[in-house]
Image (cartoon, rainbow, N blue to C red):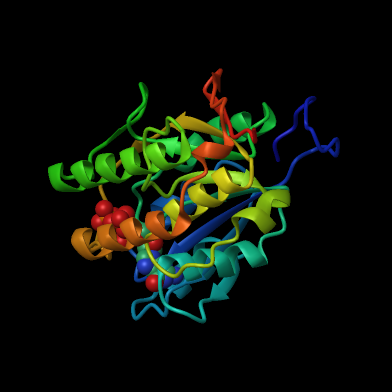
Length: 253
Ligand SMILES: Nc1nc2c(ncn2[C@@H]2O[C@H](COP(=O)(O)OP(=O)(O)OP(=O)(O)O)[C@@H](O)[C@H]2O)c(=O)[nH]1
Ligand SMILES: [Mg+2]
């Protein structure tokens, strides 16, 4: 439970849900679940029809976890199902492969409490970093991020990164309606379209601990590009895209 005197919703303390999509992550889940800092954090695990014992590990290590079975395949569909089941004031999305540390929660919560609607992790800010990004994936992410910033007049430094947090009250604007790894791009577009205040938070991405990536850089990069094209441009509506204490307000003109 995170207490704050400046909770804009004025109901204290704040409750947090963490939504974790997990497909064959039995070996990685323990390190993730055991690092969740607060026993009162609601844990929502979305199982991707795992063929290993992901579900057993989840139940054993975190009996209070809400387990959701995905109806459609893909990370985006899994997150949508998990968000629908979450009941906290704040929702944090976290991968199950051990690459993102729950110890960074407070920085995300802090950004939300200080006024952001969406706090997005960035591996490219001072204090952030990645052991996981290959040269090719980093290049693709930078290129796609530059296209995003051009279309939306933003200065985001990391487009395709899945460590993000938002107020559950922003769910109508942010609820994913896209199945795959383009989900973060889709949510960032929705944030720009919906006039949300976005803050970037430095984040350190470690290597996936066990198992193989589900991401195919070329296939999924093209899906992100298609999502960007379909999302159109919002920059014309935003003559002032200012940065105040790390926050970008999307303003209508
Ligand atoms: N429920 C569910 N989870 C998924 C699905 N696809 C991926 N995930 C989870 O989404 C998270 C991110 O997937 P990863 O395979 O780690 O993708 P990535 O981080 O880009 O790739 P790596 O760099 O290799 O870690 C992990 O927790 C996966 O288990 C899916 O179809 N369903
Ligand atoms: Mg990963």
